[in-house]
Length: 236
Image 1 (spheres, helix red, strand yellow):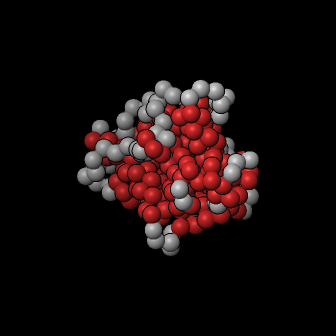
Image 2 (image 1 turned 90 degrees about the vertical axis):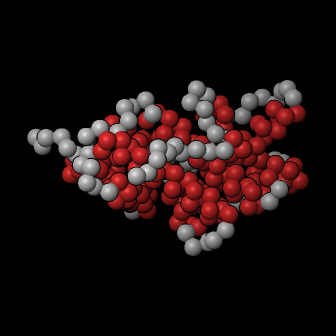
Image 3 (image 1 turned 180 degrees about the horizontal axis):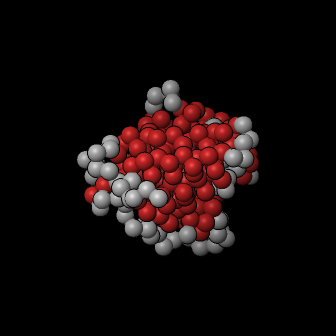
């Protein structure tokens, strides 16, 4: 059985504390007043905000220190000082996007009871996150997983790490529901998670690529059907 998992992000990658609004930590840039360290963090957040949105539309490979510096009105050397290389910039952008994911999906769902209720909240939060176009190009992780699925290296490893943590978090809630008698204990948690993730991922692709306004409704119906099939609740 899987151990209880959480979608964690390192402090360097802008971990979101439950009581601190993401908008205040990453998306909003505070006035450049105060210590040099504070100004440096403000600049870093501003860079990552732009990088996440560009990557969601054009991919991580398109990110260049020169282009970001030009867009932000910075010198290349000034931006380079924050990351050191294109690869470090890409990895930091993934970490920042994971913090957005946590803030919009994971943190709100933690208020729900462990098991079926929390699982449903996580899945619904994921669909709302996609529907609301938090990033200009749609779901950040849908974009970068397709981009790096066959590109070995540290950037791909970081994406894989985030995706595994999400799958493990969902599987943990399936197992909690099995332990509480809400889900059939005979089903394999990771199989259920695979099918649930397939519904959300296909919804994002269908909505954005094909422009199908029914995509998210279809995903919700598929999720309800799959959860009902493994639920121990009496059928009505």
